[in-house]
Length: 153
Image (cartoon, rainbow, N blue to C red; front, top):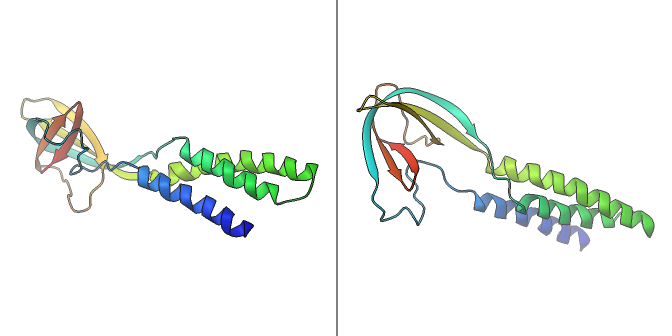
């Protein structure tokens, strides 16, 4: 029974952390951005390179890891030994939970450098979408709403 509880406590937070990751692709809008006027600028892609977008670093991963580590540690030993292993397990679990959350929510990104029609050159980073490849020379639109920009074709 304790093993099942520990497994549920371990898997549930990881699923929650993955579900909390926001979508950073060029075709995804937040509720606040929907039906809001956007500034549209046209341009030409000068270069494209792949980048990593780091994962989230919230309290969910460390908190879940602390709970799981504490439960796992408490099952080792008895008396005072159980308390010590609970504390050690909680600390180790918190560190592991933080690393797991960041790793699970990390995304492959793309940096698109655009020479806009007004002559300015800007670089935009967004999540990589294999269905929307960018190449040097492509004509693109740069859409900006509420201070956030995205590149689309």
